[in-house]
Length: 295
Image 1 (cartoon, rainbow, N blue to C red):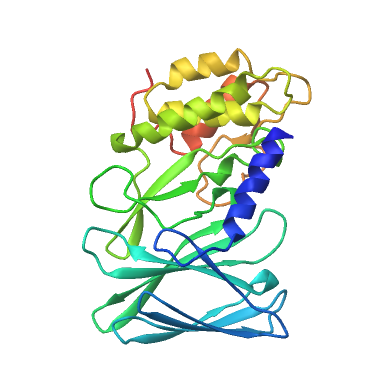
Image 2 (cartoon, rainbow, N blue to C red):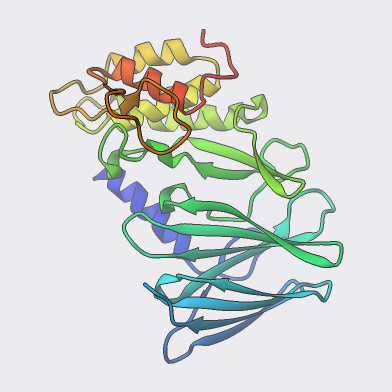
């Protein structure tokens, strides 16, 4: 139950409304009765309108930036008539940017975050993230490591369902910087060690709770976080000693070849029988062990 409540809390935070702030997401809610909304904030003027969609309503958004340029945007699926926005800067003395977030509906899916900014005489846009609420960003990114650049913190949702059921899964943090129009994964930077230390300390008690059959989700996230800190071997030994090893234990299905596409060729699947071998393959496949010494 405690794991489930953590996931629910994350989902509620994702759709909570509040006063306009450069550090929070603000909810714009529409309905069939009131299908239009206009928002003015920090020099931006945003006009939203619900339109019919294939599975759920879509949203048209006419956005005018403080510089005067305007752009018409369309979001195909926006469950419950919601769209969220956040405004801020991504570097010291940098220009304002806009993040728009929509939710398609469905179990654990899907939040989409799109970033828009002015470049020359044009408005540019790029998609940051599409995925689960538990891994989504819930506030405008902050400079976590003091280098003057905002850091986008997401959760690695590849861990959901991989070692246990969803509600007991934990997603280790991932960090991105926005650089020259694209998002760069900087998760392995030493500057984020304090964040991994905090995450490891938070998740370890759930891994060590041998009364909880679904604890392997916490154990997998703990080892991943410790791997970022260069403590992979010690963490694997520590977590393997307390991991659930019953006949119904859940492990990811490995693949003996690198395909570069979804799925594994027939006959190349690997069925793991214990946590240690499963987490080793999983983290190597996910890129956690590529750029650090696993001492």
